[in-house]
Amino acid sequence: MKVKMIAPLFAALVSSAALAQVTVGEPWVRATVPHQKATGAFTRLTAATDARLVEARSPVAAVVEVHEMVMEQEVMKMRAVPGLDLPAGKTVELKPGGYHVMLIDLEEQVKEGGTVPLTLIVEGTDGKRESIDVVAPVRPLNSARATHMPKH
Ligand SMILES: [Cu+2]
Image 1 (spheres, protein in one colour):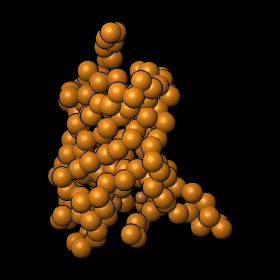
Image 2: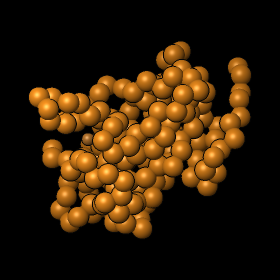
Image 3: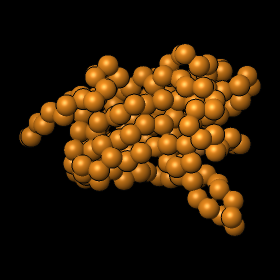
Image 4: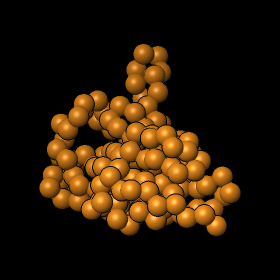
């Protein structure tokens, strides 16, 4: 068994992920307005060895999915994907307008200044799964490009 330490870029946020084969950089969740039922979570994932993000969970949402954005008849739409490949050594960015973790059926408003716990489940090529817990700060609605107001 080989154990490889990766220097964490965001020590405070990834402390629980430091032993994982996937480094989670700068996670954040977009704030919601009252009664908004869904929002996105974003981060940068870097795998030490080939892996795949296969599942995500959060106590704030009844349903959590990994989404991609696709162009359909000149309209950007998002749809769930069964997983997201994380090639070894390559940083995969989950960002507004691209891949994201979708938090659906929110229990309550996600407010700026708060935090959202997220669990990311990654699977190695050997089929071994590992869960990574992170605490993502909530950023304002208009953070980055507000390209997608989810409608589920
Ligand atoms: Cu989405």
